[in-house]
Amino acid sequence: MKFSWYIEMMRMKQLLLMLLFAGSCLGAYAQRVIAECTVNYSIVADNEADKEIVASFKASSKTVYIKGNECRTDLVTPSFSQSFLYDKSTGAAVVLREFGENKFMTKLDNAKWQQQFSRYIGAKLVVQPDSKQVAGYTCKKAMLTLADGKSFQLYYTPDMIPSVREFEYQFKDVPGFVLEYEVEQAGKKITYTASKVNLSPVPASKFDIPESGYRILN
Image (cartoon, rainbow, N blue to C red; front, side, top):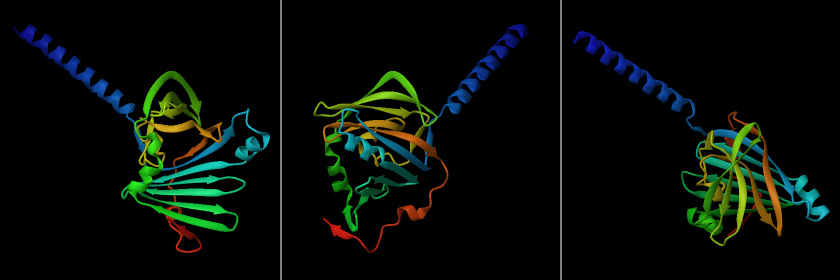
């Protein structure tokens, strides 16, 4: 009896150790929510595009800033600049556009913000077996197919996820941080690729909305 009891106790200890080990492994691979970061993207146009278009995109850049429930996306090109400031807590956004000395501001409530991206409603994401390194992160390939049948590829790292997912509305259901993706602009394929991911705190001033100097557009 004593020997049987001893064997049973050893089995219980082994089971407990196995459960603790499994739990620690799961914890080690838990997805990290990123609430502070700056991500810089390079922009490349399809080689079949006009040389001027290719050069224009090459000279352009995109930067994403995330801080808590707020996100700012800056797109800077040789001819114009555009910024989206999105607040997850309200679902509202502000769009700033600059064409030379002309500056415009558009305010969007949650309904109008979603309307801007209505073409992405019902999009289906299918993860592919391929992977690649982007900005130092191992990223999985996925195909996003829209309701109209158009599709494009993206690469995301499952190791982390942004605290604000709706700033890139088409990627809000992607289970990770998208570090490379394709879009179609003017009939040409454009690829955005993260060149640097900085996890340092972002200044709160990045999300300040200008009080003057912009013409308000509805």
